[in-house]
Length: 187
Image (cartoon, rainbow, N blue to C red; front, side, top):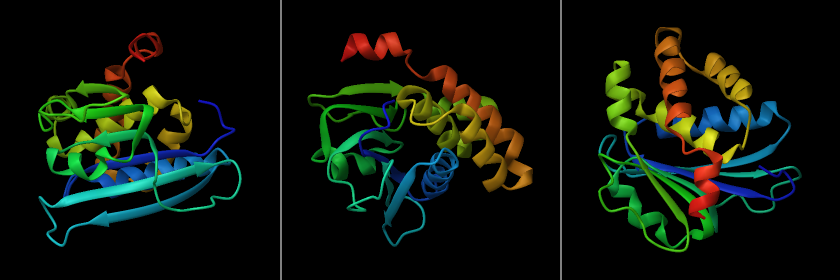
C-alpha cells in the first residue's frame, strides 16, 4: 500500500466483538512502522449487541481531521453496523464482511469480500477470536502494515492467556484474505 496519502479504515460490528481492541492493535502496528494514526470510536450504550465501530485515519504526516469521511477499507463483523457506514465508502474502496453475520453487504462502486470470519474463529477454538481473524484478512488485503508489526502489536497488547489463540486466528485471517491478483481482478 502506498504511504503517500491518508488512508481511512473502519472496523465495525456489534458490542462485545473486540472491535476496539482490534483497532487499537492495528493502530499500534502502524505506529511501530512510523505512521501517524488518529483513532476515534463509537459504541451504543448496550455493551453487547449494539453497534460498535472504530475509525483509523492513517498518514505519513500530521492527521488533519481525526474522523472518517471517505473510507478506503471497511470491515463489518455484524449486520447491525452496515447501514452506519454505507454513505462513507468511497469509490474503489475494499469492504470485508463476515459471511455468517452480514447476509446483505453494502453495494456500490467498491469491492466486497464476504469471508467466514466467525466460522474460522470457531474452528480455531473460540468465536470471540473472529476479530483477530478479520484483522489478519484486513492487513493481508490492504497491506497497510507488515505482518511482523501486527504480530508485535498483538504480543504487546493481548493478555497472555489469549496470545496463542489470537496469533493462530490472525494466521487464519491472512490465509482467508483474497490474493492481490483476485483484488485487482475484481476492482
